[in-house]
Length: 285
Image (cartoon, one colour):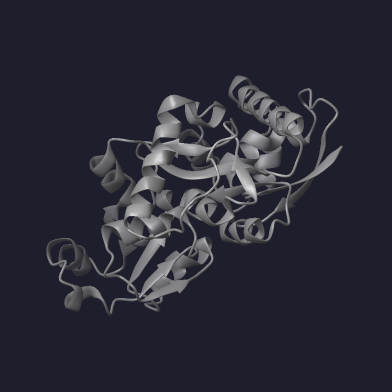
């Protein structure tokens, strides 16, 4: 049986999916037709149900819940892994953090990596007054700041390792904000599978993905050529920093702590009317 599978070409995704899509492990008779997309494109594809299995932002999951269910393996959660709000002009840091008056900051232009990204959800929690948003590809946000096309940038992925080298400044770590608010790891992205796929195939895919993550942990260099193929502009140091930051015990299995973090996120979002009411269970079982 062949299933369509979408994930981002970023190092943490290629790291966890390498063994699975290249048959370095037992895939129990399943094969995968892989589509590489940036995270917001994947979010949009889950809204239309065009992929059997997909990476998506947890924020987007609220809008894809009727079509997809979350696997326990493959998620990106953790402490110290959240998106960063950054700027070019250092005077903006104190301006935003100390003077949260809406009139003072509402006109600031903010580049975000997608409307349905978890990063944008966290920005809404921390700074609801920042509404002048422009959606850019995540890799273009630093350049937009440097050209002063925007005042603030919301960065994810490898950009958190490179922004300082370009003379940009951190306003706030939104992951740290979340952790202080909730005491939970921040849920960034997960792997979902279509609800109309037979239950035995769903559980099989979860098993295979968990096996793939375990293989990656046991053989961390085995997929480097594949990872490098999709991360040509990154140094080897940044690639491994990226993987170390986003791939952890929650990627192997959400467990009780990971599931609680996801539930807390959706509860807060519902309280603030940031997402629609949910009529389906969040988890596979």
